Image (spheres, helix red, strand yellow):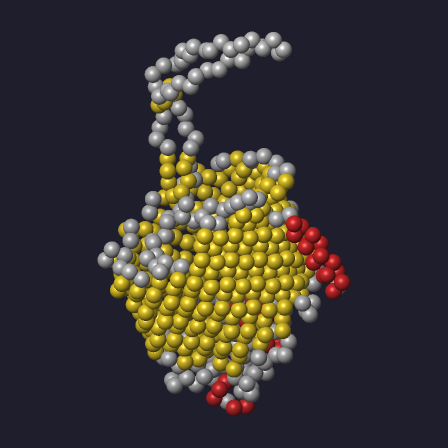
Length: 534
């Protein structure tokens, strides 16, 4: 199978020279509806005196030249409206930024960002550190997150070649401060410190109209993870290529290819998703076939998407059948739950078949999206308490179905005040277990942003709620975790043109909720500091 993996990787590399990039409309752009009927305002006919040229003896023809004449037209005023709400402006420039703050309990946050932009090029360097230490109140409750990031973008005007490069290197530290297991010396392992060294390199190259109305985009992604309790380094390579043939303005054919391989493990997904796209406003239709090969099996799934725009794009209905197949590598799993027994982590590919109906509406001052999705899944990633080291968790994979309801809303109350929110409700039915362990059935998030004093004062607020979740105890009985409830706020004030003071207050109600059993949240914490930006 390793030889097969290498052959497929080489095949994916072949289109490297066929590179393209589709321009996407940005969230805050506007669209002008240009289709309108125009009539002559003053007359129906225009009298023009032609200038008689010299007779062309060879071709036996006259070629007349006609002077241009200005005319007046009657037509309705073109409609201009936002595709979506333009965000409340951020009064801080990100070209150069330095930020540092300190608070309790031993809460430190620092960030340095340096940006460069010239014509069609931009680059950015980011260094960030966040740490908190509450071990005075709860033994070993401390974390540290460190990030070094570099990004680069270039678009060549001579050949429309677009290049993107992102490199991130992160070092994260966690401690196993399990409140119950740490009371029992027999249940505790030797090493209670977890260090995760992560790397992520992402590059893409794109070009429109490479030849014969063909666009192409090639992307490369390499990730690695090293954990201090394991001597192995996990490496993950993802190669993708998307070729699009534009038959005409209304008909397109697209062929995305993708290979996702975790080296030194029998974990891979190769996929091809040929798709026909019909664009004919107000109705758009996509027909697709998803072909995928994983370590478990070969899959063929149909896919389709029908969208109907109503009232000049103010309202859109969307029906879709889609499929998601992806690898659960240690890199992705530890991003979800860092308190793992890494030696007992199992890696599998998850498969989701989605049948969705959704609506989108954009009007002055508001944007709303809502969807209802029926999901059939295989190998859904879940976590259970480890019986070997009771401070940690193990992975399990289960099949089942889910009816999922999502809603997103944004409302501009005032030009300087915006409020937004999301909610998700899940109805899980598992094939072999009773509950989707450690998964809240309902989550809601509300955010607000308010600018005052001529944009000198910025107030941000956030409320998060997650319903009760279930977990499986060591005695094989089911237990409930209390709901998640968190309120946070941030204030930022501009002292000078490029200097700010800020303050953060997190978990205002000092809730000790547990996302994972035995791991209560940090509780009430605050931070204050300065920010310099220009």
